[in-house]
Length: 111
Length: 112
Image (cartoon, rainbow over all chains, first blue to last red):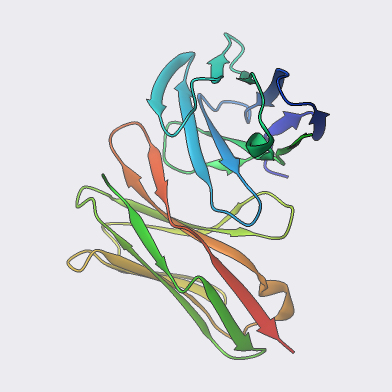
């Protein structure tokens, strides 16, 4: 157990819908990273937050947005969902260094 | 842009043999190189990492070597066991925001 939690574990929704994925970092970690992993694919970096502020952006679609709250938990919002958005979404956290610890992931299925 | 190339994409070895996975990075400012193991349906887990001031690091059956001049680093697993079967990802630090750039992954298959 890495200490990073993500909810929900599984999410099934229809095309066009909007969902919110939640991540709680390890105690004391200020950075949160979001990744997308499609079936049998690598880790696609989406976005990073540090202490509430956006720090880096990767290949994040305009339909996706994220934020980090004062208690340091983070949410990833996915809207106008398409079939191709079906994937595992991981968040990771770090304590001001590059060592990232991953949560268990949320498996999103868009039907 | 910056990238990390990882080879091979699939590696099949006999149980008990050694496995080597190689990565090449492009950003000469990279100074942190972790390796993650991801079992099917599970989270990626950090198994070993190395910083640029060190050439080699070992932890039991796994080791990582770094050649900064050539900009490549490798993961070595000795005496492979069935539980080593997984996808392994390398990564390299970029920029000043503790961001990592990731390799595409290597599927390691241990044959009994």
